[in-house]
Length: 402
Image (cartoon, rainbow, N blue to C red):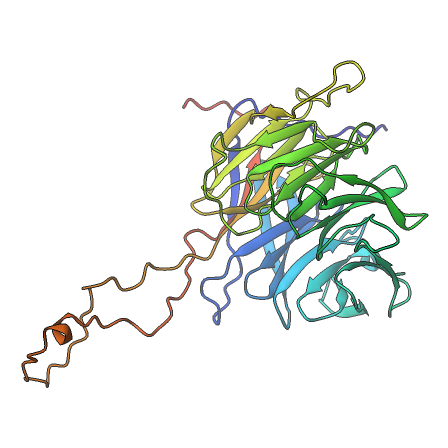
């Protein structure tokens, strides 16, 4: 039987079919999800949390018209979690492949078993300004590919490598740097897997900030997408043509001057390559139609400026920053997670209630009467909305009147 990708209908708002919360951490009351990713068969998803832990949820699928997801395990880490990715083909029904790779601050890269969290192998990163290539069958140090330009070669990137994405069909991958691009240096480059060398730079984005995410189109491996720090636009390049300028820019906000959160916000593309989804700091999720905004043929119509693409639909999803969205691989569903650190404004001038009731002396010095007692305690962060939600884009769902 021929496999067909699931269909999603984003012509009207989705149905909320499931709301979950993280498992409670008594030592970290204001915990929240940074990002979440489905394993390959969609039988479970893994959540990266603010409290230096992963939480694993089982997703048994649809039982009649009911959706359910159950917290199964928590994998605590020794330091802050930087990022993670599932092993290719990971499935809860295939024990050897049911694992994930985690990057934890000040630790070697870890290969962790998703069934119980045990360490299968570790791979030490020696140089964060280089690409480290490991054979996952052999723990230990790998091959190091320098990326910083030198006197002999101007190819490469400056700064810490922050993102990497592999093409599904070709012998290359893209890397991005946290160092903002400049007129003389881009912060995205294409590298060859076989030759272990830079192929070409990729630039032209007007973000002027570090790269936070790279992703290839799942069915068009010559199309590359990139997101940047403190920037609400996603840029697209067609690698078959000139890569000095993006061909499209997907913007969630019409106001480029809007102040954005420092928090990393991840986008996702469904497996059919039809829809791109991304959250924002206002709790909204935007859906972009990639079919209607297909890449421009540079030979027939040269592009001087990138084409700006507006979302097909935007809907209110959470009461806090939507840090990540993820398409379920075998259902017409989108998973979204929310949460962010918020701080009180602190004690304002003249709002202090701390007075010494035992003191009855009247100060004659006028300056002493204007002394403001400021709190010495640092404000503790709090979370407005820390939730996991599953949305249905099933074409057969009922249309609700606005």
